[in-house]
Structures are given as C-alpha cells and as structure tokens.
Length: 238
Length: 141
Image (cartoon, rainbow over all chains, first blue to last red; front, side, top):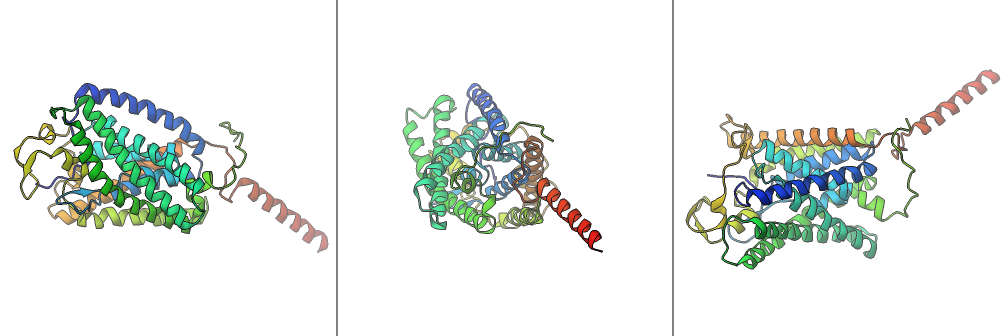
C-alpha cells in the first residue's frame, strides 16, 4: 500500500501537546498576518499566492536521498522567506499545510499546529535569520545569492526536524526508553541529506526568479538596496 | 498590475501545474525523512508496511478526513493512478493558489504607493501631458 503522507500523522504526538501547539501556531500566524500586511501590496499578494501553489507542487515531488528506502521533499520555508519575506512566507507554508491536511488527508488535522510550528514557523524563521545575515556578508553576485539560498534552506530543514524532536520529547506516544537522542540524531542525519535537496531546489528557483524578475525577490529588495524611507502607511488613503 | 507581472504569474503557475500534474508521478514513493525516522525499530517489507518490531510509527491513527475525495493525493474513482495523482496535484495547485492569492489580496494594505510602474500618478501625469499637447496642437492649428 503506497501512502503519500508527508507530515505528522494523528496519534504520533498526544492530544494535549498537539492542542498547545495549535494555540501557539494560531497566535504566531495571527502575528504574521499583522506584520505581513505591511509587506503585502498589490504586487506581493498574487506573488505570495503563486509561492504557496509552487510549494504545494514541489512538496509532491519526493526525491531519493541515497540512503536505502528513504525520500525527502521540499518544506519551502526558505524559498518563501526569500521570495516574499518571513511574515508572508510563513503564511504561505501554513496555507499549504492547511490545504494538505483538510483536503488531501496529509498530516492529521489535530496535528496541524505541530506541523505548522515546525515547517511554517521554525523553518521560515531559521531561514530568514540566515538570509538576512548571509546577504549582508556575501558578495552581491548570483553566486552569493545561490549560496545564501542553499545554506538557509539546508539549515532550515534540520531546524524544522529538531522542532519535531522537541515535540516528541513533550508528547510522543511511544516510550523511546530514554533514547530521545537517538531520534534526534536520526532526524538530523536524514534531514541534513534532505536539506541538500531543499537547498538545490531553493537556490535554483530563487536564481531563476532573480534572473527574470529581480524586483519580485523580497530578500533582494529589502536586504540589499539601501533602505528606502518607510512609506508613512496608514490604511485607507484611497 | 503590469502585463509583465501577469505573464510571470501565469508562467509560474504553469510550471507548478506541470510539476504537480505530471512530474509528481515520478516522485519517490519511499517514506520521507520523518516517516522513516519514526519507522526505526520496526522491520518493513518491500512495500514499506510494518511486519515486526516496535517503533513510534505504530501509534499512528487514521486521518480525520481519510475519506476525502482527494485523500492521499489521488482522486477517488479515477482508476488510472497516473491520471489520479496528476489530477489531484493540479487541483491542489489551483486550490492553494486560489486560497493563497485570494487571502493575501484581501489582507493587502490598500492605498499604499504602488511600486509597479503603473502608479496612478504616472497615468495622471501622462494625461496631463497629452492634454497639454492637445491644447498646444489646438492653439497652433
């Protein structure tokens, strides 16, 4: 029986811990909406929709990672952070996870808060911190951009995998006999390899967009150009 | 929005539809990093079904919406697995785009200075210029 589940299934983490993370994720996503609105203009909104749709598509493409019988797939946090910024980017990944849980039966609905916390919040946050750092220190060349995307993507996947380990420590439903470190090591090792794939996909995609429409790459706009004076925005000038 | 931007969006969407609609059928069907880590301690057969041992994955329970017509990235009722997977991918991309773009469009801040080049100011400026030109043309003629 071939199943295509890719995210935390029901029963893996206990109900109370899942509920706490659901509340946490909801609060964090609300904050992302508030902060993301500052970035969302007439141009970024449809672009963010495209980023979400693209992440959905690429998440379906499990790739082999050259260890027996294991595959990996894009998580997308770094790609989203690079193209539409950290706040809107986290929302993009969350939209994908919600669609997958509610329509495709992938990732338990009760586990949605856990999955969102790992992939949409932790993954995107880790990626953006690295992007902000690396774009400032690396040369302003396509190579610099590619290295930034690759490293941010790779690290973000490992960070997201350790988010799951922390959740399992809090509410895992199987007694690992004190061998949480074993799970942490297995998850980190596998996701380091998956991170290479994530890095390659992210770097390729970002470079392609940067070549065609550099103005549509959020990270290039906000982190490389001299900061333009913030527009004194207040809703409703029109 | 500029035509250029619409073209980019259409192109990007087309790539996503091809990836989810066609390439998805060539994806690896092995368990991913998370699932394989949770299978550690169990022995599995060639189809990755648990045949023995003890591991966290054994605690997994059914999905609340396992009966969804698109559950497990297939369209229920479509026998051909290539078509079933591809169609579910296409629907997923369209639904995700609709929810994402629609939601973000509703959330966007309005009235901010557009940075797109089709700003209302430019349009007005053009109008003023052309009106001036017409007036000059009229005066001269």
